[in-house]
View 1 (cartoon, protein in one colour):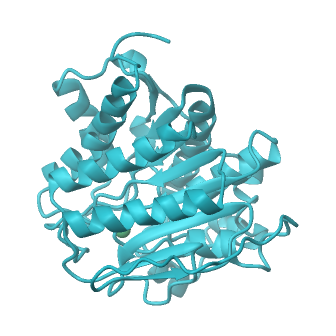
View 2 (tube, rainbow, N blue to C red; view 1 turned 180 degrees about the vertical axis):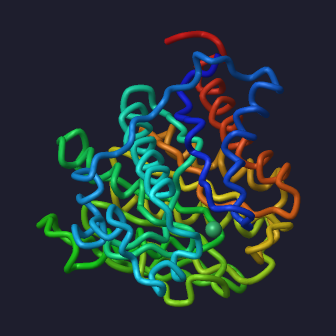
Length: 340
Ligand SMILES: [Zn+2]
């Protein structure tokens, strides 16, 4: 029924107990899509877990072996803010495999959405902020290794800065690629309250729009960071996003966009301090899809955070990310239910 695939597994559920991170949201999104009559079973494809060698395209062998052996220190587990178990490791490996699959299918179909993933706070040698493995960095590196793409762009709209992403793709010591550095001209945008910082980028251009006064308190430079003020609302947010996307796509021509569609810029999020409405978040998604569509750039989507007071709102925001993609595809001539 959809003009693209959704990557999903029942095993995406993270066994982390009673937690602000509602790990049942993935199943609830799938159920919502069915109850709205928007999907059938043929819209879903099931991921395989990423392999250890895939994961080690991003993560250090030492960290991966600590995960496999269960030998994280108490401090490392605390920093992750979710309890360690071998089952949790397996689940993150599956989300990473899901993002690899979503990236592959995006190249074939134009769009693919992983109903999971978006673990942008994971670093090469440690996890933090509910993120153990950086699924979409693994996906990008996997596609690059197989020469399916050379250049990717991450567009991170989670309320929290994508510190792991910025570090992995911006840290000169981590990426041995010899592609040229990109110039860092001033963006020349000046909206009230926020500010833009431009950092290094090589073969992956990273854009992050986030609340400045929020986790992570140390923010490694993305290619473009938009540091938003507390309480930023729909119109201001959408203007910033439009500006950042236009600027990024003037400087860099990605062969794949990884859209990190966090639900936590929502005004009723427990871990966010922005003021976006449900409708504003859907407009955000449309803006990203249209920018990519206008340039014929495939988009793979991961869901990232979402901690609304009512879990139904988190589910609505993520479900709208699917609906927005279908509507933009339909407006570009691809209709619901018509295979092409
Ligand atoms: Zn977040």
